Length: 242
Image (cartoon, rainbow, N blue to C red):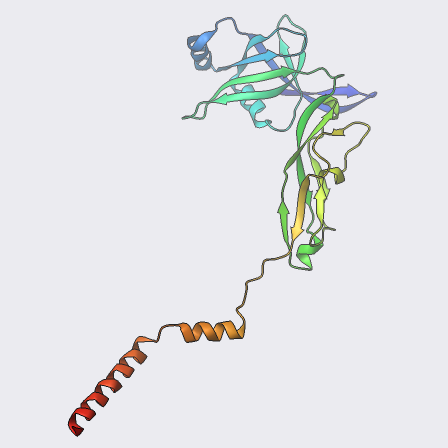
């Protein structure tokens, strides 16, 4: 499991950095990758920034722990023997389509003093008054937004209270509680995040339409049989009177 260490910032410890210990991978190709996995290691590559791409081998348990953080914009410190530690983020991964085994990790270097664009999950809390009082329906429209900020300022997630939403009212990206001094919204400010809509009413036909539909409906089998029988009896009576 990757170790976590505190990263000092602003004179105090304020964030956690996940540490990945890796080795350089000399053997390349499918056969080399297969032998690496059989030995309990996962092929990986570290690229981007000012450095050259580096082929790595990561312990399978560490690699799986990294994969569990996918989508959370975690900053890792990649430690490779004989090289300076590098900060990186998980950019991509490959899984076996049949067994689901982890086959490869892509790690991209990040500079802690350079702003980057990332997608951040948006979560809602509270029950909208439009649902609780007026019986409306709450709908989530957008589940994440794109922002630009320094790696150390990436929000883990954005949580917003929707208790005040009434029927017809919308929560938009521009309404989200972001610190403009640290985080710049890239997603369109008018993008709808969530809203409350009026409940759908089942249409009840008007009395006149219901009566017309009833009159146009075919007669029940019993009624048809009765009418036919009365007609036959009338024909027999006429025959006797002739």
